[in-house]
Length: 165
Length: 165
DNA sequence: TATATAATTTAGCCTGTGCTACACTCGGAC
DNA sequence: GTCCGAGTGTAGCACAGGCTAAATTATATA
Ligand SMILES: [Mn+2]
Ligand SMILES: [Mn+2]
Ligand SMILES: [Mn+2]
Ligand SMILES: [Mn+2]
Image 1 (tube, rainbow over the protein chains, first blue to last red):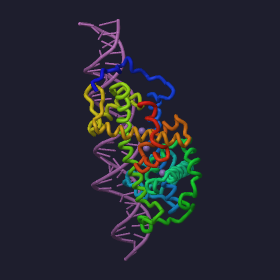
Image 2 (image 1 turned 60 degrees about the horizontal axis):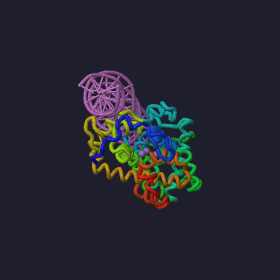
Image 3 (image 1 turned 180 degrees about the vertical axis):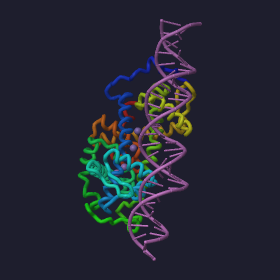
Image 4 (image 1 turned 135 degrees about the horizontal axis):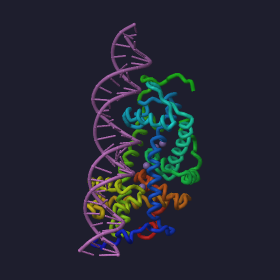
């Protein structure tokens, strides 16, 4: 508690990259990656859900997305226009929302990764419902190396989820 | 492709809770939980890192946190005052930052969970560096049920990380 | 003791992502 | 052909969490 201040500007320098011990910069790298992930996270969930809706009902409407994400349609509209800027979706006033080729590619990647994460959790004994809830957040922080490890342990995504999903 | 519009307002209702098939509301629940997690995520990482610094050098300064998170010191200051509002840390002008009892409890919980996640990834064959990077994001989306499953598979957090950490 | 410099504060600014309230369109029912 | 309601659009707000620039304080050391 009443310790002397041992860390004024002089002796609190960098923290060299000794092997084994993390070090401030490694930590910064990790957090930076997490922040990056959160920026693309919304895009990933949107294209994934839009792909879903396209398969199930032939088109994706803003109101469907709002319902699935549990947000207002206004939030969806604004996000969709950002995604359009980014070249992932197409949308015209009062019309449905569709995916660009880039959007389809991203959706395919995300749906695969999502399925793998759920599979892994199930394999570890997590119940179906919990696995689905947790996977929704976890999926966006899985590097390709970790994804490979998950696949190795859980096996290929079993069946394509339920049926065609 | 050129499918007829099969989903006008009439036939696109709710999507009943058939067992097995997710359904819009379950999805909404998952996304809602993820958004919640992102709100507490910053708090978790801050108290965790502050606890680290307190152990290592007896106090936590804004500049240390800025370095570890890879953000500007201004961002740290603003965040810290939010955490103070939330009763997790104490801080006075030009002084170091400390944890409240609530902050210490949260930090302990997060450090444990963080370690378990890293352990699990290591156990699955993910390399040390990658495991650390991915864990930084994954940790915030682990329910208590999933945490238990991780512990079951990876074993108790081995040794307390490196040494005292 | 004086001073240089590191650390902190403060004052703006931005973007992303959420909301409510209200206006508008479009399509199916009548 | 009209009209009503579900779906969209738009305006305006809030908050989290980033930033730079400039002013201020504390402290190490000369
Ligand atoms: Mn997700
Ligand atoms: Mn997903
Ligand atoms: Mn983290
Ligand atoms: Mn996350």
